[in-house]
Amino acid sequence: MQWRNSPARYGLVSLFLHWGSALVVFGLFGLGLWMRELDYYDTWYHRAPEIHKSIGILLAIALIVRVLWRFISPAPPTPANHGQMTRLATRLGHLALYALLFAVIIAGYLISTAEGKPISVFGWFDVPATLSGITDQADIAGAIHLYLAWTLVVLAVLHALAAFKHHFFDRDETLVRMLGRAAK
Image (cartoon, rainbow, N blue to C red; front, side, top):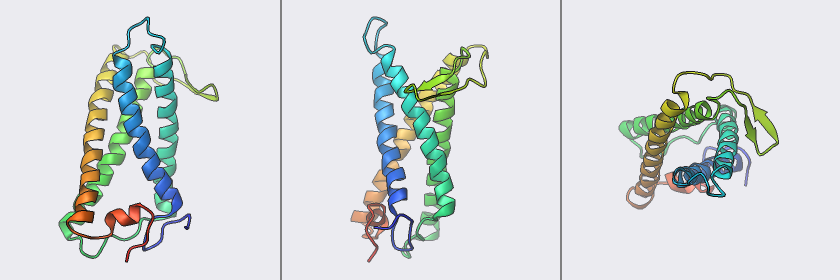
């Protein structure tokens, strides 16, 4: 299989970034909901947020790579059976997913750096706090982070359902191409 996208299918890099991001987003969502329920004396009370933040920063890096990769290796053209409204919905849906991903990550960053401390990414490197000290920063960013994360997950589920609709009802190659197989 090729690394770059072709007119018939997505390449390995796009597939890895797409499916990897999806797994990470749902994993972070579950971890985030779980760690909100931990009490101070739980052994995971400090460890879970550190893991959540570290993976979130790595997701931010992957997201930047993903956006750059779209310019280096453009996506295959939309299937011929997609009408103008489907093409517009696809474009707007993808833009919304990217915008939500960036917004959730930025809100998470603002929570994590509210006290002016850097974010340590698994001890490999630190991401400095560039904006901190705003009144109620962690609380406001936390509420935004939660609502945006829910919105992102709901939109991602709708995105998956749309792919299944294209596969099972429209019988087009939308999902097949995202699984790395060539369109027929």
